[in-house]
Image (cartoon, rainbow, N blue to C red; front, side, top):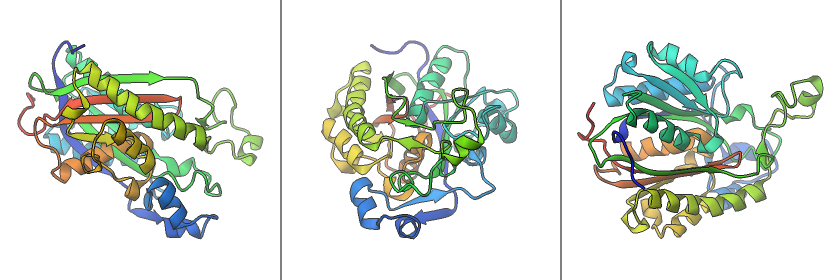
Length: 337
């Protein structure tokens, strides 16, 4: 379909993961599982866990600070801060407001975006639309999670999957033809398949909800897996169609890091060799909204991307939601500033 307005791209990146590492060997001492079982089914070998003193905003602030430094952007020049997260510091106020204040983005608007693991790519589309239409010039978009706080560490089906971390990008106008070229966002019935049952207005917190462990994450793993395998490839193809591109033109795939088998299925749908797929699920596990920006930053720092590369980002999450986007890499002298 093409895009209207200014071209928008990534001009700065940053990420952060807590120092504490929890390995599969550690989990073997906590629940009835094994390193072999976890690796064969998920590809995960370890995950990072926030300290008792750290909340989601702390991880987001560190990633955001690094992204601003990489972009050469002063905090006071940021127009908007978006934090994509399903593990906010508190239900009210928005974690983005804490981040905005502590980073010193004094003139910036701020809000949280809740689309679970799809949140970062949803945020890319929201931020890009605001910049393309001349509402803002500079947006700091962060995906940040402390999933260790909502995981039942006695449930071997979920506790092995998740970790904590944050990734951030700075978005600005870029040279025409670069930046975000296409996207596809969506959702379908399935909110009951991946959720936290209590703590909201439907089921407020009570002694009973705490005793029943209803404040922990619940997941129907089989159904979510089936959905993910189907939608990751489909969503990627639709974003490419929106950009009037084909899979053969794609240089890199940066998928949500949930499960190596899901990642492999998406790569197969796009006919992409795994050496062109960014994978770090083995070291971080599933970090939800932080997953894609964290992987994106690691690949960037490793020198994998060159100016002009076509990159597909795709994720899925609770809702059930999905999101994909295609960007032409603009980092390296193509930003207008």
